Image (cartoon, rainbow, N blue to C red; front, side, top):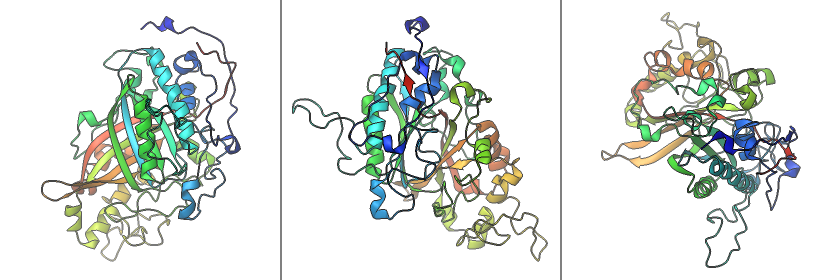
Length: 452
């Protein structure tokens, strides 16, 4: 398809965002979106921001009419705004349930891709407000516009977050949509291989990745189900993953959860209470970064599906488990002493003259002190998929991290010579999926936009 097939009209773009009070209760209208602002001109930033909303009026922890730490009985009433400074589902208080899906485009028609993102915009905004995709009252002989499994459940703290993989911009050397020059440098080349990888190429990467998090698995599944239905004819599902029970916390107000090894996870990672300077340094893409013209205010998603060989782990004595992790299993404190959030002392030695925290422990290997200060926002989930033919549990960690730049905030921590060759933990891990995607900045209002 020719790049010239998209006419160039002028639009006035403002940074005005919706407040939480403006979040629709019964309807969700999408401002005028031109084809130029989606795939040219305003570029991918406008595309992703309008396509999937942001955190406006949310102030990193305040949801519409609800407090972040409310009782579980009220959790289904939580709703987050669709538009704002950053996309929701990143620094938002982490929900308990997640479904992630990757899509591959089945067309090179720009108009169809633009229309898909418009359709997703409307659907995402309505679902995040606790509404069906469209009016459920349709003629009896017509398919309903909403699949219906989330009727009456409420918003359930749903957030929908979208990102674009390397292949969205350039696939097999082909610039299908005329946007290859918009691809940020950190997306190129993907994520390096790690120890104990057993990757299925069909379960890795993707053109577009959508994360739907909520407090009810039916709500997350309903969101992906309906977005997939709307994608028919334009994109097809490449892979999906359900996650239950968060393994991270994005706020110090959230209790640190445990992974399937029984240890608290992600204690030292970014929290929303960190300073703006610290968060901007490690999480949000900045205007001067590669791709910053289009992606400033966004972030990069890095994911790994990690099978945890729990039967192997279960045979380790407690001391071996704690030496492998570098923390006390019950309280989560570093082995050097203190409480969970006490800074680890890697120089402190025991009576035998050896460091109390083994230098090849997971904590020592991935801690910012040993990785040039690099930090990440963790947003992972446990997963369980039954048992294999030998009765071994098929479960583990859907590792999810958001970073400003994978090449400085993620890869140095997870590359082979750190999180593979020396760290003790790969003996009980098997990496089965890998992927990364650029999460764009959040929605901006387009005034005077001409829809072609």
